[in-house]
Each structure stands twice: as C-alpha cells, then as structure tokens.
Image 1: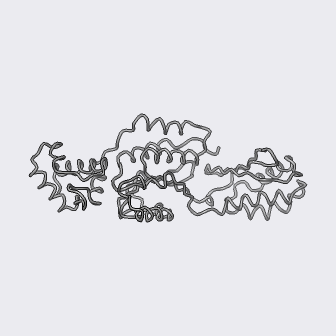
Image 2: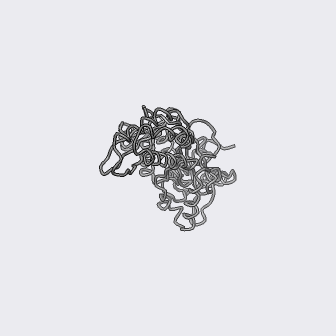
Image 3: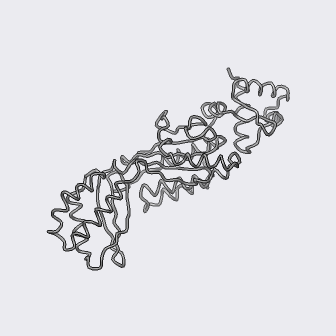
Length: 335
C-alpha cells in the first residue's frame, strides 16, 4: 500500500525527471517536502521495493520505473493548462476553413510534433471504406486538369491529370458528368470495376476522345483505390534524435524501424473512447517509448492520432493537446 507521502514523492520524482532527464536526488525531495534526508531515503527505498522507482546506472538518484510511470499517469497526473502560444497555433489551423479534414488533422499533428519534439502520427482508415460522393475538375494551363475526388466521409484527393492537345475541355466535362451520374455512391474500391462495365461501353456516345479520357480517369481511380490498408502521416519522424535517451544510433534505428509497422499502433487495445496512454512494453513498439493516442470520428470518417515519445514524456501536456484537437475537429468537410 502506497502512502500519501510516497505518492507525493513519486509525483515529484516523475515530474522532475520528465523536465530535466536527470535522476532525482534525495536532497531535491527534501527541499520540496521539508523532510530529513534519512526519511526521504527510507521512503525512496520503499518505493523501490514497490517497483515504482529504480536506480540509474550512470548517476546517483532515482528515476521512475515503467510501473512508476503507469502509477503516475493513472493516479497522480493532472492535465496541464495549455499555454496561450500553443492554443493560438492550433486555433490558426482550426479557423482556416479552406483546409479539408485531412489537411486540418495533418497540420494539427505537425504543430504538436513541433512544440513537443515528439513524433506524431495520424492513421486514417482505408480509402476502401469510403463511397464516391463527387468528382470535380479544374482546368489548368498546358492541357492539364486538376481532378478532385470527394468521398462521403470527407476525404478529398487531388490529382493533376495530363491530356493530349486535341482533347477539349467540353469532352472532359462530359466525361466527369457521366462518371458522376453513373458511379456516385459506389464504394471506392469498386469504382474501377464500375467504370469498366458501366461507363466504358457508353462513353463513346458522348465524347470524341473517349479512349484517352476513359483511360486517364480509370488510371487515376485505380491509383486512389490501391493504397495501403492504413494510411499513415508522420510529423517529426526523427524527433527521437533530440531526446537524450536515444543518443545511441542503434537505439534510434530500432525505433525508426518500428515506425514502419504502423498497424501496431492502431492495434493497441482501446481502454475507452477518450485518450489512452501506453507506457513502455504496453506500446508493442519498444520498451523505451510511450504512446498517447486518441480516436476521432468526423462525419463518419474515423482515424487515430498518436503521439510517440520517450517514457519520460510530458504526459500531462500531450493529453491536453490531444484533448484540444479532438474537441475542435469538426466542420462541414467534404460537403
């Protein structure tokens, strides 16, 4: 059974080590709690027996163990108030109504990665789970057009298409009208098949250069629908290099290689629908990191935002940032 004084000591040690990356001495705790050194050392020994503290191999003092971090996160940590600067940076993104859902989320995690020096990742569901809502085109110069594909879940994909000189803008518009008429509402992974069996047989009745236009749009949709099962976007992938725990090149290589297995992040067991914290061995990445993640669901579009850092990460600050992002995501994306 851990006493109130031991809880206070563990909180002091965890937060001091998170801030400085240096083992915490009994003298430092004495100044905080105004107790004798002998009392502090005795209490620290008891916390070690409870497997909440451990000795550092390279310096005197104590640091939280994995169990210590878990206890701190579950029982002692309080969410940290956001600074005005952090809030302003994120508000700039959420108030920019020209951004679609994807860009809003990506820019948000880029900011979190920048201000925390941790790695941020957003995992979106497969495009195969979307249905086609609309195709739009914007004529560009030099026989180029911007094709815009919008799904029912707010995903917006842009692709520049290159056309021969003899293809008219009118034929392009007719092709898009035909696609919108026949293919809207189709699951994204079935669009290519529907183009082949429903659009291809009749497109020649509507446009002159039907072969090149059909092939151009077919290839564009095929590329869109053959993406990975989990679409991942990283912010600050190499931020681990900035953490003193990962000064070893081999350790950094190990962690970066783990990032390639992005599905391991999404497979972590969800404890609730809020913000979940995984420490060390719980992450399924490596024992040296922690992961804080949350899920979002905007207009039916689901995904996961995760922040990856050392076990000595600012849990309270990251929880507050993720909570702010989750509460502010929304808007009429894709409408």
